[in-house]
Length: 183
Image (cartoon, rainbow, N blue to C red; front, side, top):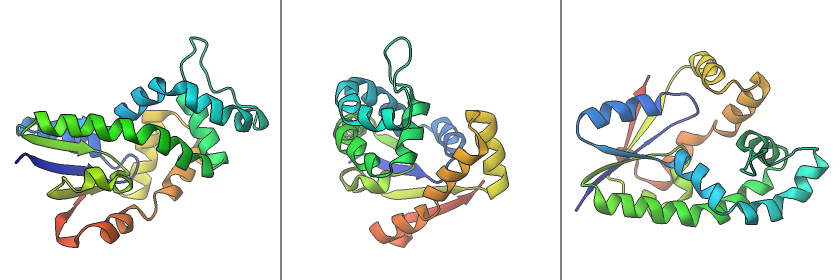
């Protein structure tokens, strides 16, 4: 049986850094955020069909000049209409689940880097351990601003949306499977 761990935690806590350290120890990492970006493009027609009426109400253009989804605009729309997040997830998650299951099957030591892995119990069940990476609030705020260039208001909305992240994991898996890393 393959070894599988999850690396999770709030925005800008240091998940990618921790995954890079695991890769040095022979683990293979898959980043769910990158898979989501690719999956959104695969199903962009479905997403646009569902979301354009809402985007027009907010005067948000969901596509880039080349026709790809503008992910920042999509994120802004999802925070304006939180109910749309469930719709997007129902469209995108089946693709992500399949891709990560294929990754796990082909890598004897697999790491799933995903903030909201708790939303996919189909994947969480594979994990022998969940590493929850956290960092102080202001450290995360500075990192997020530097990395993403988003306005502070948007970063703070994301932080707020993730405020109960650890609790979500603790309600879904045994607490002894969770390792907390303070970065």
